[in-house]
View 1 (cartoon, helix red, strand yellow):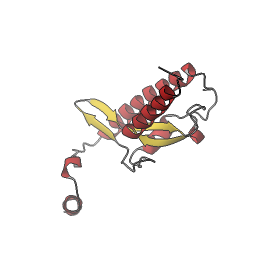
View 2 (spheres, rainbow, N blue to C red; view 1 turned 60 degrees about the vertical axis):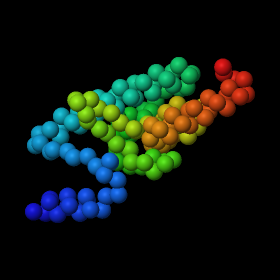
View 3 (spheres, rainbow, N blue to C red; view 1 turned 90 degrees about the horizontal axis):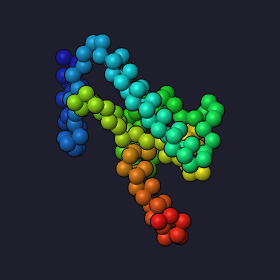
Length: 140
């Protein structure tokens, strides 16, 4: 009975039903889901390391962002737009709007240099920086 009351309260206080998602909880599935999310974030960290290496940024040391850092960003808010940072499972695939935005773009993605940004804000900022560099003749 309590679960149904919470469910109805959550629905009646909702302002955008397009963002409502239903999840069927199955005992034992939590560990499997966590493992899938961890693997997703492991690939993300690997890609961040490759990007930083390519840009000549120092990636050595134990303060580089890791899976735990990214896991803690789930259900927090984007530091720019306040959009909820989420993980979604659809058709057996994981997707997420979670990204690490570097505060100082000259440094690698170490924990002290990163904040949680949604993918839209991170891409918009990246596009803005590229546009400025083009105007200055730094890139084509």
